[in-house]
Length: 116
Image 1 (cartoon, rainbow, N blue to C red):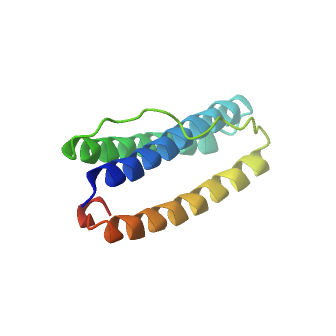
Image 2: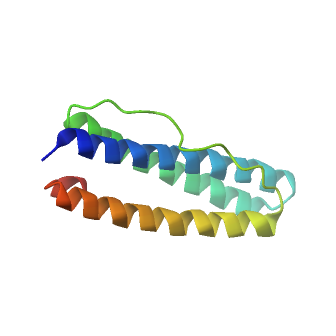
């Protein structure tokens, strides 16, 4: 197993998760401000779940003797329209599933079944 390759894949996932945390909290703030409290709370809970994913990824990176790169994959998109927020959130989750499936294949090819 190439540890560096696994660590790089895991850090890429950390960046994606951090970007999601920031985006979902942005949605939480703006939906709450617009009076959409149930949706705002949902995005806050989702952001907290994403933080849990970061923690799991970080634990695996540290187990592999790597360093956790706490760098979001991208900037927060300034979307404030509720319908556009929901569309963006759905697209993010679809992309996340594709990314994790691709990373699982790469980890398998790298003989790192535990990181899958």
